[in-house]
Length: 94
Image (cartoon, rainbow, N blue to C red; front, side, top):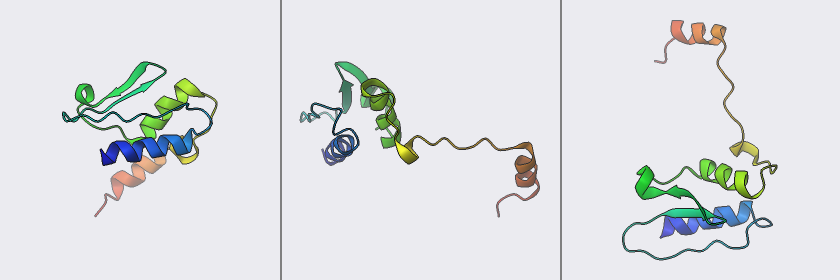
């Protein structure tokens, strides 16, 4: 329940002007499902794990307000250039 409460708080903080509600329904079976506008976007039993908060926020954003920037949660790692790859290959992490 603590994980669900933390996730709900994070979603409300990020999407306070875009979500009408975030509801937590107690369960004794470890259920963790996230619906947005009636659409299931995450089911822990199907996927076998909790979502990364970044991924969940992106999925919610894509449905409720696709143009909303999420700051650091939106940034994708820059691709490694061939020069950087060669440098990494010749100097492996110790």
